[in-house]
Image (tube, rainbow, N blue to C red):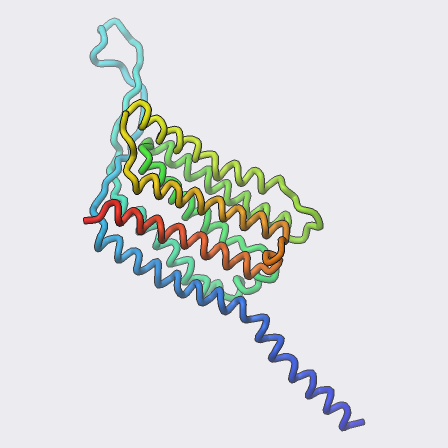
Length: 278
């Protein structure tokens, strides 16, 4: 009896390391990706300031005032515009890449344990906070490149995108343990994130029709890159919520988010550096 008990105990302890190794493999791969994105974000900041020319965009505010050219008896108000400040595009790109670098560093250090637990729960709120901030900023950059300068409109665009990604987190949470796909928050999140693109595309079209000018090629390229990236992010969320094939594994879902989010940032920055090179 003593010999049999010893044999069973040895068999059980022999299986445990194999199981633990299999469980940690996907998380180890994700940490490797975040190490690469951390290095990539820092290098991208250095390259941006080394090779990109100083490119300033005006932030303006629109308001009503009396027309100084009109008759003194005419009290009608007209629309006017005032420049609040000029912002260097390199600063905005550095902030974007800096946020990505800090996020990667936090996941590799302070948030490491909570991040690993989230892989089993299928919900990670800080990823959605990160995407809300970076995609809101990147969409505002695209709007600036497209000709939108009013600071109120730019802040509204980024705010709507932030709300959209907040709803995306809610969609992931709704479908965490749901037996059937719950589409309400997902549909609202898609509408919120892509709504500002109607304004961006309208401004782009108006420039061609009324300004008789086409935007630079790199502006169209960045518009397409960011738009395709957003479509891929929400396609990944859709497949994750529906638990389709490989997307049943949340590590696969997270890997896709990393590749899409950082990929569209790096490619967009590379295109802008080429477009505004020294």
